[in-house]
Amino acid sequence: MIPLEEARSFVLTKCVAGEQVTVALAEAGDLVTTTDLAAAGPIPPFDNTAMDGFAVRAADVAAAPVTLEMVGTIAAGAIPDIEVGPGQAVRIMTGAPMPPGADAVVMVELTTMATDETSVDVAEAVPIGNHIRPTGDDVETGQIVFPAGTHLKPAHLGVCASIGVYDIPVFARPRIGVISTGDELLDGPGPLGIGQIHDSNRHTLLALVNSTGARAVDLGLVPDDEEQIRDAMVAAAASCDAVVTSGGVSMGDFDYVKKVLTEIGDMRWMQVAIKPAKPLAFGTVDGTPIFGLPGNPVSSMVSFELFARAGIRKMMGHTDPIPAPIQGIAGADMLRGPDGKTHFARVHATANGNGQYSASFSGGQGSHQLSAMAAANALAIIPNGNGILTGEPVDLLLL
Image 1 (cartoon, rainbow, N blue to C red):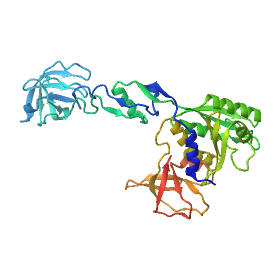
Image 2 (cartoon, rainbow, N blue to C red):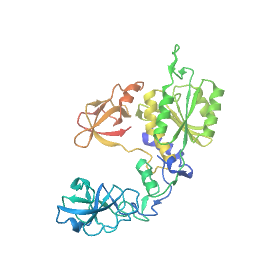
Image 3 (cartoon, one colour):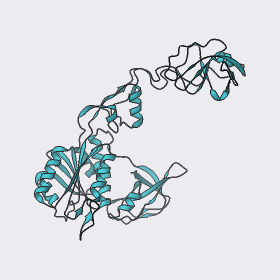
Image 4 (cartoon, rainbow, N blue to C red):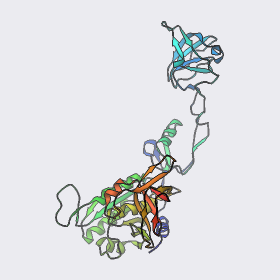
């Protein structure tokens, strides 16, 4: 068996960041920037009010309660063409630009408008700048809002829009093909024949690929026919940036996938010192990375999290492709025996009152028990030995 770190290091050497492209803002979610993004102007671009109320001169309400003359209304998006003079007030809506002469906003809850709307009573004094969002309060002109290498999440896209950046330089979103093979597999809801099982791995892996921000490509189900498998693998390598398969990677397996990949690719067949997901095949076909994951459904998912996710993240330009674990505590005993492997237990982690996660098994730990994986939100990393007792620290890889 080889260490996890060695296997993952080999995977990462074959996965390289993709082409640098420019995409529209709407297509940039989950991608990684290739250059610094700077603001051409300030945000907000003008002084504006943080809430509904009345724009006033702070000096005029220092002796509140006072009554001020109403001289107009400014809505969001309106031009502030009303000047506030001594003893005057302007009704103003959240986000509206501050009118000249005013230096504070009194929120509407502290005021009473006259029935004829010619005056307003102000109940409390407010300081200069009250409820005003000044120009550049969020972003200043020329400020680098996101450096190169930023992983763009929804809030990042909102900032890009606010600074007027609608064309984003990023690493291209990779196309990751997912393919299933096997005469025993049935795709769809039809009744199972003797010896048949539903093809669950492909659908799971397609969703996992999409969760990385890459674009999953469903390459379908291929029967156990050497020629068809060869054609499918060659076509997949030519049309996708990486390919993910499951099954046929164990030492004892004799499988058409293994035979074909050995003939057409530069593959390494590994036994990794982990449980589940010990068998891993990884290499390239015509330069395209091929992830051969184990066939048991839980093993397939764990292998994806440990190897394929890291490889895909590197292809997307992430400088930290390996997801970092967090430390929690064992909410129940996590016992095991020494076997030379690191175990990745399926657990449900719950935040406790101390800001820490407490984790317990989410169900059965067999590599075929997919329902326990579905109930899990983390993998507990249990080193070789006798396990972890209740209350002891445990590293968690959040899913």
